[in-house]
Length: 127
Image 1 (spheres, rainbow, N blue to C red):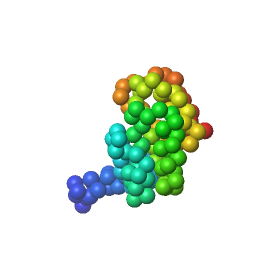
Image 2: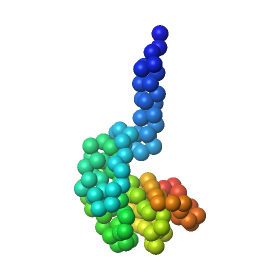
Image 3: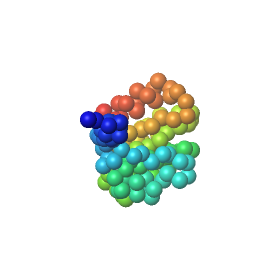
């Protein structure tokens, strides 16, 4: 007989496996993007521990994001992503920085992104 707890455990295991496959991490736990906190050290630590780190771009300009991604890559070879704010005045340039570094996951937050941002984000992940 199957119990409710075993059904729940099976469902959780399937969802965790799906999350791991999607993120490319050992566990399907993503570090939330927290401005001024989710920087290279926390992101690399999260990814090195088996989760998925996420750089909080916040108000960074493209040059700052470029350095932050490079700094994160120096600390980990594990997957991580970047969170971008959709109303950032340099959003498209920030997406280009993510593409340059082959960032596989870009989270667009803070409202509906302009169509060009969604298209460029998807295209950079597929290149």
